[in-house]
Amino acid sequence: MALPWFRRADYAALLSLFTDPEKLPETFDVWLERAKAVEMQFEKAGFTVTRILIQPAPLAAWCKKRGVSPDQRARFAYVNQISRQGNPLP
Image 1 (spheres, helix red, strand yellow):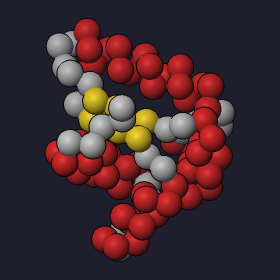
Image 2 (cartoon, rainbow, N blue to C red; image 1 turned 180 degrees about the horizontal axis):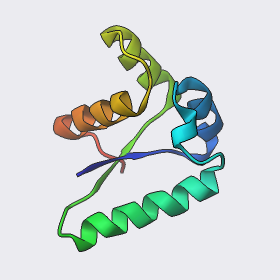
Image 3 (spheres, rainbow, N blue to C red; image 1 turned 90 degrees about the horizontal axis):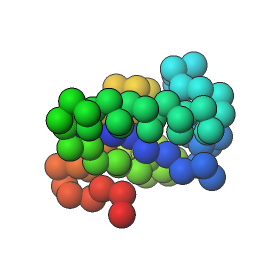
Image 4 (cartoon, helix red, strand yellow; image 1 turned 45 degrees about the horizontal axis):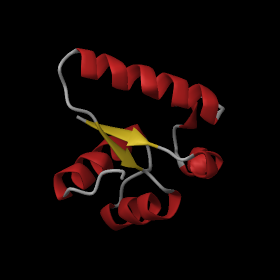
């Protein structure tokens, strides 16, 4: 299970990039708390979770190349592609 993961330093820039920032909490701390809870739920259900880092510039370039909007659907497609390539967060 590939899970989008953000760094505190990138969070504001990502929210500005995303076309659907309303789907995410306004603050990194709230997002992190929720993301860890989701991660724990998947792990309890027996899934192996891989955190996939999303950074503004690589995601923007990926979306532009594919002609897609940087929204939730693109975020999940991006992390799934990265996961298949074997580049999870260290």
